Amino acid sequence: MRKPKWPEYGFHLSRNSRLGIYGLLLILVLLIAVNALLPLWLGNKDNAGDKTLEEAWAQFLAKNKDSQRFAAQGATDTILFTFDPNTASKEDLRRLGLPLRTVYTWLHYREKGGRFYKKEDLRKLYTLSPNDYRRIAPYVNLSYARQFKEPDIAQIYDPGISAKRGYEADPDLLLPLNRADTSALKKLPGIGSVFACRIVRYRARLGGFYSVEQLKEVYGLPDSTFQKIAKRFTVSTKDIKKINLNRAFFKDLAHHPYLRPYAKEILQLRRQLGRFNSVEQLRQIGLINDQKYRKIAAYLSI
Image: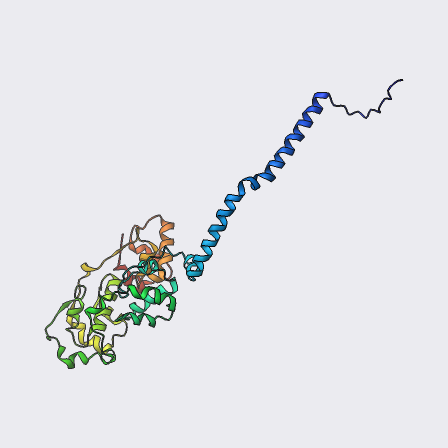
């Protein structure tokens, strides 16, 4: 009996071709199976480690509620160390784990003449949380503040009181404005510890005075006091610390009271020019007119 003939549709594979296809299908099935089973074989140990890390992180956050806030603001690792709140730098305060808002409030308070005489004075900073205060208070060292007694409130509002207490200076006394320390400044009429420290602090921020008239910019200094002391100073511009326009970073410019408003524009112009060849090129910045240029030029170099 003859075998029936199957209809032919024009599609024919040799025996070797069929074996090759079967082999590829088998390999594909094996790869899918290995991909599905591999996590089950190797994943138990890794998952256990992940769970342990998650639990440890959760416990850390529970104990340090402010950690996420510090991390979001780019804080470095928190380190508790002995510090003087009157002299601590921005970097020191950040290392203590304080948020930027608190750090800037702290520095602004000092720039305005504020001083901490006891650790409880830190509570004056409204942005300092109770938790942060309790955390850093044991590390406060007031060695700088002990150089001065806490000023009499009357002296702040009546600068002439120093003269009433016998501190009237010799009428022939002449001081170098860019070198006189607080002790020397307090010999002048109307200048007590508060204004002496403000003058020295503002001088440091400027890099030195080029004119006695700049004393009018010292926070809270009455015009009547300025008139009394204006002729008691000599000014040497050689003592001014200048900022190199081609080397300065943003923070160098932004820290200076006169340059802060133009810091971004100065750096942008430097990128456009490649480098500054003269300080006068700053006149290309629209915000800097002739009057402002004369004010800042004394603090810049090439």
